[in-house]
Picture 1 (spheres, rainbow, N blue to C red):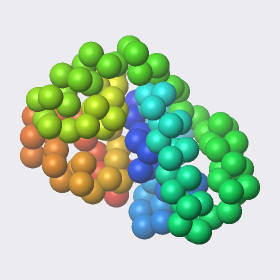
Picture 2 (picture 1 turned 45 degrees about the horizontal axis):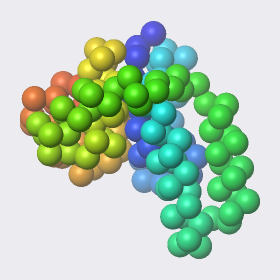
Picture 3 (picture 1 turned 45 degrees about the vertical axis):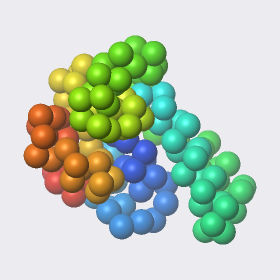
Picture 4 (picture 1 turned 120 degrees about the vertical axis):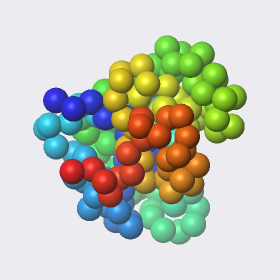
Length: 140
């Protein structure tokens, strides 16, 4: 199995039809061992809350999507195990600790972070962690 860290930008595309949803769903194969820090739950809740506030989805649909996500095969790592490395990454690369938690997990597992967050990807694709990053459309 190929370990891959997924961030909330990818997970959101599993649950809601968006640009790059098809590519994001290609990550969901039995050949991939999907990983994420526990921050993923908080970020997913926030994304769904914003969609409800914008009138894009109903509150009951947001609740259902959270329940649906519980069935997805993502192994969750406690952020407390990653926070020191994430803080170092954040300070070195001038990224948020939130983004850096995903990167810290990828580094600790010697795998790649799959993202559909264009700003994150563009800011890191030429830097020291470029090899730890994978654009969602480049997943085979």
